[in-house]
Amino acid sequence: MTFRSAVITFPGSNCDRDMADALEKVSGSAPLRVWHGDAELPANLDFIALPGGFSYGDYLRSGAMAARSPVMRSVIEAANRGVPVLGVCNGFQVLTESGLLPGALMRNAGITFVCRDVALTVENSQSLFTSAYAQGQQIVIPVAHHDGNYFADADTLDRLEGEGRVAFRYAEEVNGSARRIAGVLNAAGNVLGMMPHPERMIEPEQGGSDGRALFESALNALASA
Amino acid sequence: MKVRVYVSLKNGVLDPQGRAIHHAIEGLGIHGVKDVRAGKMLELEVDETVTDAQLEDMASKLLANMVIENYRIERMPA
Image (cartoon, rainbow over all chains, first blue to last red; front, side, top):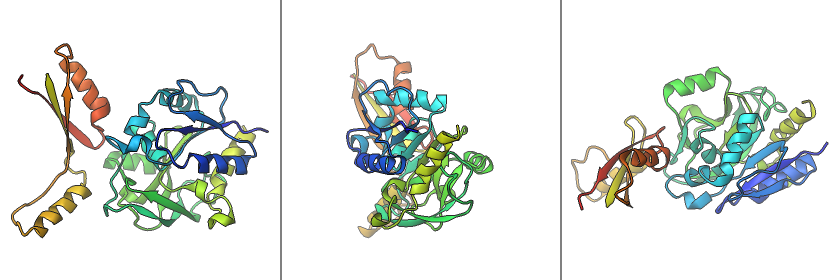
């Protein structure tokens, strides 16, 4: 089985290579690399990744410019057709700015950039991206962000919790996120945005491999589809 | 003509930046400031043909993130 994935690169993305590496190591197939100005995505994708970084220098708001770039129209279309879309860090910010995920990512409550390994709890192990984890499992994944403070109004937060759309929660306070939310799913479950970087925890040489199961989950989902 | 778009955080949205600025003001030894909210102002140079509806459109779809921010548009007298 070949896993046909794509990593989107915006001007200022800096985790696109890590993401491509992780996808290739876990799936055995090198992802296609797509530039932000490409109006169309390659056909028949199994997976789309929006990587971390500082797209467009975080001008206006983190992710705001990237969310309106030509390629995002195709990403939104693909997401609405059910193609799995993973946004990590800046990719998560792009997903909220584009309206694919609810809420917004604001400046960290402590003002400072946070760059360290954090403990996460897997809150939903039934999703396309998390099925290879155990429910309630605690994993360690690094964060590296300035704007990771997840905000949504109380009704939205209640709905997310009620529908099992909180995929990951910080085990302890990290950045001021509402209800310590670290990752959220869309209603259909095929779009995941998260601030921590699973692509940086693929093999022991990186300090841990807790991120690997996320990509394995997506592969398993494709294999059983 | 010049148009100014003021973008501010909605009430109830915490503003860590404003809080840090507030703290720094107190550091200057100036007291009596009760709260600080940081926002931004964008100045646009537009043709007369740009309608109010178009300005609303750009403000609500791009300049402000309506999840957390409000905006106010001001056409500047020539």
